[in-house]
Length: 384
Image (cartoon, rainbow, N blue to C red; front, side):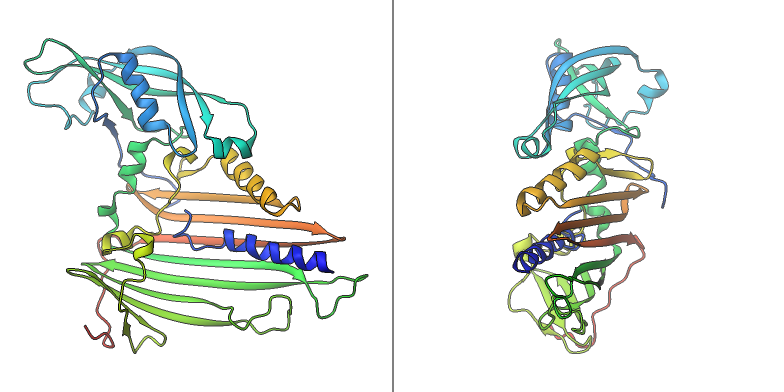
């Protein structure tokens, strides 16, 4: 039974990894407003521009992209050229040529990922535009790459990701988060060494965040684990509620309430350790935190590439626990009108020892909605 208890405690820790609020992680049809972007940097040759594209737009926290080859596929049409956002160009600059280039590159996983995934380096292809420019008043031509709009199955680029997560897009919106976690565990109160029974416990969490006009509000419901014994299925699981109100003027002020009526002002900002120092940073704290190199484009938005989700997460847990955990996980991020509109995450972990299997599963959803129409009013119980 001692080994079972140890296994159970490991499962509790693993569940905590998966059941962090979406802030810590991470319409049905994706609709992007990103049409493409010029490189900020200029290059001396087309090859240097291609290498700059791989270094700036593809290489990231998960992978390093190394050029294998590139091939010109043809000149852009007049309509395609007309559709490029040319804000980066100076008055008098002339586009000499604009070519569609197929770039073949090797995707080398970074050390932390490669050591877990145990895969060969990947060979991938991405189509980018290489623009040759004659700067006004200069005799030497320069080159810039242009990131076109992504196709389904493409890896994400830095330019697309940064445009999508632009904090200005989220300073007026409502965020609604829900989490349902189920844990199957040994029933220590009724089991014997020869007859180990299991029981399933369900826990729910939810919060709503509203952000508008340098103000924000938070309403949260969460399990109260202070007196809960997870090894005793007869323990009654209770919930507690929390309300928060936030204002930003010359500084970030926080008030909290346990009843939604009486508010107490925090002496210092308790969120500063998370980089939250104003309403803008508060508004985007629940957006995805993994960098662009982990994701791939889909028809609804984007998702974590399967090898990073299934193998990276799975092998991480196996190494951490040593019990051969069976892990399944998925994260989908939906995009509507150039903003993240919904994130859905699911995960399950199961482990076996001494003839029984215990496990945990969680379903999370975070919705972003009411852009531009959200309003926040100071509660009556808040005293400045």
